[in-house]
Length: 176
Image (cartoon, rainbow, N blue to C red; front, top):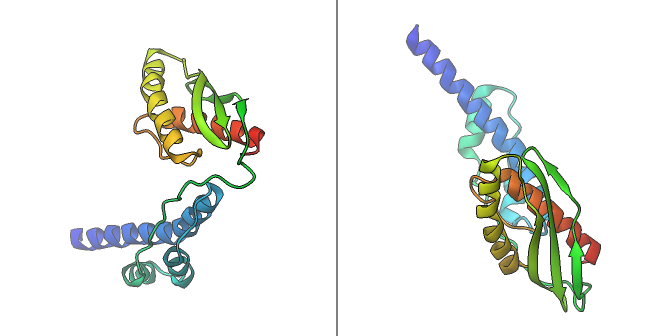
């Protein structure tokens, strides 16, 4: 009886993983396209060639036989339309569960030269501490990437999302 329950649990877990992988691969490619990166041919072909499983056993087999997806890291480049843009642009106020976020970005000849946090999360002392730790990391990442397409700061998910959303609004206002 225990062996049968363990086998059923393992099959169910594999099914959930397989379905998540099949659904997640196209979503990741779409997200990369949205954030300015491009999905590699391997990602798109793996998502397109993966069979849709109708049973848990078929889902486990599809997971085991499908090629692993490769991901691409976007290479930041200034677009021709962004060249020559100079000024300081303020992003929208973004409400998070720990308080509002707002940033401004300074551009010089189409290059991000500074990002200033105008408002950081302030719901409690812990959120202030997290924001104060995450803001310099996010600023450095944005300056290096020259875009809002940067990774989350570990332990500061809401701060990161608010910061990057406000930054993207500022970049959009600049036409960057």
